[in-house]
Length: 112
Length: 115
Image (tube, each protein chain N blue to C red):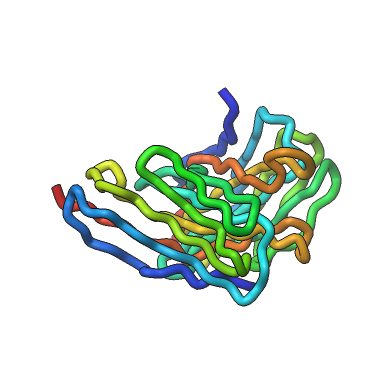
């Protein structure tokens, strides 16, 4: 099935550093979502983006919906140990009836 | 609390022994879906349902069945489990129309091991 290209696959950073990850697709999406999965839990929605160019923040997290509608990025500022987990992007494919297409995930490790 | 509840959370079984993973949501969502998560493969959709009595195959439906007799429940059935179905399974639900449509809420996951 169709998938998004999410990068990087993993990151090892020091506490306090900023983090950036992104997703790209060959298809246009009308909605981009960013989820976080804590170890042993299900993904939880962080940010939803509905308009091209939209920039949305949620605390230390900032995400943008690319102008071309084929990409999105997520930034985390001043990382803390509880930011550890897997971050997934997802695009809503209305050509497939609103199906969510997921990126492969970015695994974030934060060293205190 | 709005949530998706899966059971069991952990299960070890043997090849060929039928099992069912239950999923229930209390948000009156029309859309429900099952995913499996495997290392390096991300989240792959198994089956989905757009409403009661309406189900369809996702990307990896082989070896699985589902049913949607009630809006709140969407059980995943493995008629004859095999070791390649060892995985972490997630149920998810969302509205189908209106504000918040397609934004999935996930359950906590069910880790299945087939010996």
